[in-house]
Every structure is written in structure tokens, then in C-alpha cells.
Image (cartoon, rainbow, N blue to C red; front, side, top):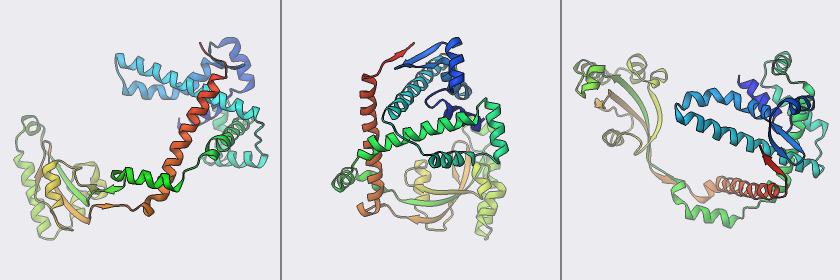
Length: 323
């Protein structure tokens, strides 16, 4: 499904295949007109269909129809913008060499196990290799246009980057962290519903504490007894920021030394035992450490803003009719 959707999204990035467009113009409802070209409802549906089931599973009742309509309009707007950019690239005479085209197609084909699988997927999707070549040529010409008139004209000065760093210190502050392993023993349904202690499960948790004090391996016990998704990783939970966990548990764990093991800690649905690994103190990154990251972030922000402005101007001087 993912591969088929990738092909569909690629092919309807800007233009539909010529032969298909000729037929669709006769039988399809016109979704939009962009200058002298049309976008048919079939083009919108081809992008919409793979996402439809995901939306249906997420939204129910009266919200479903609203979300579907919102998504349809977003996809239609994306098709309109792609069409405008492709038209502009053609006007500017942007050229894609055969070598560039071959390299791009070869990269795409690496998604498939072999050439036979690639051709089989094309056939199943009703797409010819000529269509693939045309779509990639258009995509490359659009990318070149972006590079030339959008990204190529964006500049981030050293002073801007440093100013941003000074004005947003919270973005470069790393809270205190601890490395955690955990064992979770779930309470029975009755204890959870009544909000009471589950004596049997707590006794089991206390026995694990005794086993750990006798020198048994925490990771082995976690893999064997823990009843959460981390059991497969021997209880490993990665590094956790201070303030992420429930307040009482957070306080207890951050007070432990490295390699320390907690007592049995209770939540509404389970009993927990934690092991602390490495501890990282709170720290702030210096400007030199984050300079490249800030430059990249500001560059992408400026490029996006420039593209929005450029697209708004392009739309104003184009004929666009949504039907």
C-alpha cells in the first residue's frame, strides 16, 4: 500500500499523464482550473483514497465528514500550488539533464527489491515508465526553481543567528536527565476499579526487590516479569527529563544515585520498580555548539516565508477557479 501510494503521489504531483487527462476531461468532474490546465476530481481522489481509511479510523460521527472535507480541500490546494510551480518552471525554461533524471529514477527504484518488482508495481498502478520519467522531470524542475528563486536568495547573517540564540535561551537548555530501566506489575481489574491495593501483586513486587538486593540482574528480571512494552528491551526506558514522570515518582527517582534501585512505587494501575543508570546534570548549550542548528532553522523558516509570499503573488497573477 505504501509503495502504491508513493507512486500515486508522485504522478499527481503536478500533471496527470497526457492520455489519461484527455479521457478524464471527458468524463470527470473538473475540480479546479489553473490557468489553461484543469485538475480533475480523479486526481484529487487518487491522493485522497489512501488516506481515507486512516481518517475513518481516527474520527467518528459528525466530526468525520468535516475532517474529510478539510483534507480534500488541503489536497486540492496542494495540487493547485504544484501545478502553478510546474507551470512557472516551464516558463523560466528550467532544464533537467538526462543524467539528473536517470539518477533520480534510479534512487526511487531502490525502494523496490528488484527491477521486476518495480515494473510489476507500475503495471498494478496503471502507470507507464514514460509517465514516471515525465513526473520526475517535472519534480526536478520544480526543485531547481525552488533552489533558484526561493532558497538561493535566502541569507541568514551571523548576527541574526546569535540574536535568536540570546532571545530564546529556553530552546537550548537541557533539563537534568536520568537513564532508566523499569519493571511494571499491573494490578488486577478489581483493584484498579476500586482504587485499592492489590496485595498479591504488591507481594510479588516486594519479592523482586528482595531478589535485587540479593544481587539478581535487574534487566533479566524486567525481561521475565515486567508487564509493559519495555519488557522486550529488558526494561530499558532511555534517558528521561526531570519533570516528565508523575511528581512523586519523579522526585524519588531523581534523588537516587547512579545504579540505584527504587523501592516499590505505586500508581493507580500498577506497581513499579526502577533502576537509575547514568545521570546528566542540567546544562545549556553554547552558541558555538548550536550555531549550525540555529542557522539551519532560521534558513528553513525564511525560505518557507519567502515561498508563501512568492506563491501568494503567483496566485494573484494566475487564473484559478475551484469548482
